[in-house]
Image (cartoon, rainbow, N blue to C red; front, top):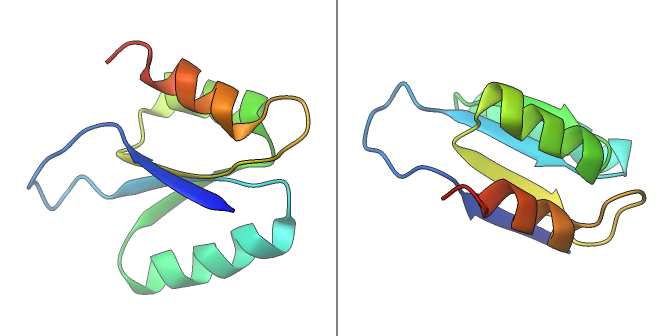
Length: 85
């Protein structure tokens, strides 16, 4: 199951960075192709710990994440990513 969370709502067309966090490389690869074709910049992480670090350092506009992942699951990632908002 994939979940998407918006961290910042804006109508600015330049704000197009999406973080995909999934422990399945094939899922990240498919989303990379689809998002690139739509003009988005994609960041990727293999688990919640990597994803949380990218959220803190890169500030993506949207996160698409898997619910069940090793090391840090999607629920914990969501809580950490949104605690400052």
